[in-house]
Image (cartoon, rainbow, N blue to C red):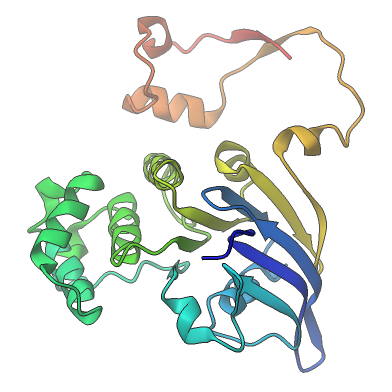
Length: 270
């Protein structure tokens, strides 16, 4: 592997007839980090991921994965990456374990059953191993989908809007999975349109708008773009997400006061 960035993008452009989707995109992704590509629908996020994952070719510019050009050496790039698209690629007829075994066999790996069992345990899916994919919740399907993407131990995983359509509990499950991946050394490039998702997960955030990166930095650096805030006491009502997660017991908070169904207004300093 190259000693430089895991991913390097320079001057990437892409048009579909008269529609200019990418207009010169530049950024680097450091090894072992979570990089969030933030943008609204139609900003060009998925197109860029398809270029980086060798599914499409750019009109101009270069993109490399560990120094290997995605356009001229796509086969070598595919050995280092995996892609999880916007819709889970889970076979509903097969069980969770059978989905994993199938992918391991398609990758011609030894001991596919052992690989499947290890991933089921890693993603807390062992109890559901022999259930059909059609019975999985949204969060479980997404976790299984990501587990399938990790077969073969790719160094880089692309997650294209991984929590779209998930309920709050499913989103939290996927967030935890993504953090675990980065903690184990996997480089994650995440596309999302959810501001809180980028804020919760990313080491660096690039904002893609009208085909170009208009800002790229850590959350702290991006916050410094706005005027300094004043410190004052404010009364904050719980959000609907706070209420839902408290009532369903999935906040991860063991404080009995926070589990009170009366949900009193909380005071905080900001």
